[in-house]
Structure formats: structure tokens, C-alpha cells
Amino acid sequence: MSRTITYSGNLSDERRFLILEKQFNFEDYLKGDEVSLLFRDVSFITPFCLLGLLSDCRRIFERTGVKVKLLGLSTACYQYLERMKFFEVGKDWLVAEGDYSRLQAWEENPKSINLIEISRIDQQKEKGAEDVVRLAGLLRQRAKAILSFWLGKDPKEVDKFVTVLSELAQNIFEWSQDFGYVALNKYLYSDKVTLNLAIIDGGVGLHSTVKPKLDRKRVQLNRPADYICYPFTQGMARSKGGGLLKVFSYVKDWNGSLFIRSGTSYAFKRINLITFETRENVPAFSGTHIGIWFVKKK
Amino acid sequence: MVRQEEVAAYLLTKPDVCVIFVWMSSTKLGEHSMIMRLFELKETLGIPGTDLLTRPVADRFVPSVHLLVKDARDTTDSIEFSFRAIGTADTSFIDQLVIVNTLDQMKRGALPRLGVFLSDLSASTLDNVASVFDQKKIPILCKQESGDYLLLGHIERNLASVLLQLIKKGKLTAADLKRQRGYDINVASTKLNRLFKLSVATRKEEISTKGREYVYHSLF
Image (tube, rainbow over the protein chains, first blue to last red):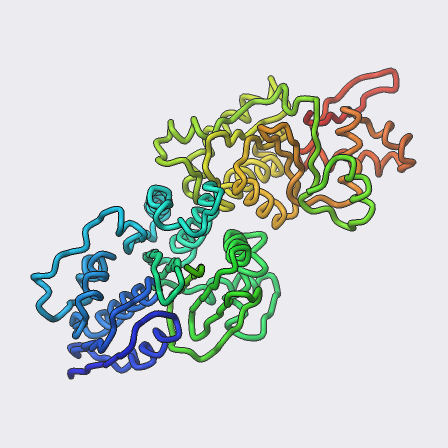
């Protein structure tokens, strides 16, 4: 069976991505189904949506055994995806249809180092730790370009970004039991400069990891979304995972926003607020998908 | 953070002390301590960059730390983790190396009990140390290049005031504490013993005319 899912409009934030994902109905896909994603008027995709898309193509491929076709990608979008190594990383699960052979690739140059390309974090602890250390080194190397609007007068502020990146990325091998990806990009959108850090894994998910630990401590929370907020707001004091508390504290300090999706819930901390708003019954996601945004007026 | 002169007042107003005091000291913290230079060890282990990140990386430091602590038993009474030249150490690294594999091992008797303090922390490492020790509800002493000394993490108010007294006096016995504060001798002994068990004080057994007694020493 052949299915085409059409999406129009830029994939510029997590809500738009969830709208796209609502159409996927992963459970319906059968072995041999051909799935195509048709992008209409999409010229912009954030790292958060990029990793979501990558993960969805992997999930669809795992059910159908057929690579997902991406149709109608604009030139700018294709070049950006290529620069982020999207096609290289997802080569086993997806393919872009169209003639992009004459397009010049975005060179790695001082103008395009305001990003960290999609990087794999291994599920095996030692290898995963090496991946995190390498990523932190890359962030330091490119900090001037990536963090120029945030470092202000104190270049040592980069240390805090390294902490955030490290604490989030290492949860992939500490908790998820699956490999994951990290991507980061500073971009101009409208009159604002935005830094988006995204992390995803297809493992057991934050909810399934946190709940048994809290059950053992006889901590009962009301809704599934409360379990995904807990390590960020309370910390897992006597076990691993205390780093997420620190991540949340830095996000609040810099007035950023934080989106966490796991299971059928999500939690969102908006700019100018210090608490999470939560939602249940969103499209199911087995792993954990996290996005952080820091926004400054240009 | 609170300056030395403010500490007493602060202790009176806060039921539980958490991260908290800073003072300038002319004395030398850890004059006789054994130093674990983390940057040099990182280089030896072939870990790239300037940062100390993740638990698996911390695990690679553990054999060296254990060797040092076991060797140090006869020659020193405290161990210093020097973070000089380290960009940032994340909470996971600090937790895994300093708490899980050092302080917890001392608590279980797998390592000899020594005083433990950290030194030369970058601003973000300091922040991460404060966060992880506060979360685990234990205190840690730190020495900064600037000359500031800090007690980070968490300690009960009454125990913090005994620690402050120990720091001021340099050394104390349970009998001293009983005399100065009017505590029952068992209470005084328990409080000093708890500071020793938290690795923020050291102790030596001494024989005097009164018999054997433990003399508790400040780490500096």
C-alpha cells in the first residue's frame, strides 16, 4: 500500500511538528507499505523537528521495511538538511526524491559553524561518554559563532552550556537503552536570534524510567506528564539523573524554553515562566524527545 | 553566599543550612593533604578537551583515586581534588567520582576515612558541586584560588555551628564542646563524630592524663 502525507508550512516549532506527527498513525503501517512525506512550502526546519522527523522515518521503516520518501523539499531546505547530515545519518530509513544533484553543498565555513550537525550518542556507556566529550569539544570550538548572543561579557558562560549539553546527552546511554541523536543550531527567524538544542532517543522513555524509581520511593504523581517533569523540577536525589535539575535551573536562569516529550505526554516550560504546562494524549513516542530554545531580539 | 562575619547571624535564622558560607582565611586549607590533580590525570588517561563530563569518564579516574586514598592513609589525613585548569565538571562526573566512589566508599568502610575537599573550581563547576551536594544532602569544603573557602551542599544548622566552632578553634574534643556549649558528653561526641564521618573534619586518637580521647581537627 502506498501512502502520502502532505505537510505545508515551516517546521519551526514543536507544536507544528506534533501536528505533522498526528497524521502518521504508526500502528497502521504494514510490512511493504510505501510511505512518502510531501513537504509543501517548507523552507525551514528547526533541529527539534529535524530529529523528530529522523526518528519518525526510522520508526516507519522499522514497520514497513521500505525507506520513507521525502518529496518536494525546497532547495534551501534540502541544503540545510544536508548540512546537518540528515541524509547521511538517516540513509538507511529515508531518501529524498528529486533532482538535487546540481545543488552546491553548504560548505563548512566560518558562516556555517553556528550549528552542531546531527551527532549520534551511543547507547553503550563508554562509547556514549566519548561521544559526549567529543560533542562538548565541538561546542567549545564553535562557541563564538553559536553562543555569540548569549556569552555577553563572560566567555566562561560557555561552561554552563557545556554542562547542559552533557547532562542531556548522557541520559541517552544512562537511561534510554537505545542510541540517540543531538543537534544544535543558532538561527535567525523573524527579528529574533534563536538557539535550539535538540536531543532524541528511541529507548524506554523518561516516563518509563522515572516511574518505577518513584514507585520504589512510594512517590505517587497524578498524571504521566508529572513523571517527565519530576527529574527536572525535583531531581532524582539518590540516584542518577540529578543533572536534569541543573539543566532546568540553567534554562530558567537564561529565560529559555524547554519541551520534553515521552510516552503520550509532553511538558513545556515557556519563556518568562518557571513552571511546566503539561498535556496528555499526544501522539505516542516511545523514547524521549527534548528541545531547548533560547531567544534574543536581534 | 555569606561572609564570615555574617555566618553566625545566618545560622541563627535558617533552620537548615544549605550551600553556604564563605570566608577569607589566613590559614591554609589542606596544608598536609594529598592532592589529586584532575587535569593531569585526565591527560594521562587520554581524555580530550578541558572538561570532565559523564559518569563513565569519572569511572576511569576511580582506580587512581582509590590507590591514592589507600596510600595516603599513613601519611596524611585529608585528600584534595584539584580542579585547576578544568573548564567544567558536570554534576554527573562530580557525583560519580567524589560522592559515589569516594565519600560513599569511605562511609561503607571500603576506603579509609579521610577529610575530603575540592579546590580551584571554575564558576560553573562550583555551581554544579553546590547543586549535587545539596541534592544529596551532604556538605563539602572547597578552597578557591582567590583565597576564599566555602562550605557547599547541605548541613544541619546545629552541626554547621559546631563545624564553624571547630574551624575557629582548629581542634576540639567532646569534653571541650561539652564545656563550651553545655552539651551532654554523648551529644558532643556524636556531633563531632558526624563531622568526621561527613569528611569535613579529621580526628586523631590521643592519650592524655584523662585517658584516651579523640581530638577532632579542622581541615584547615
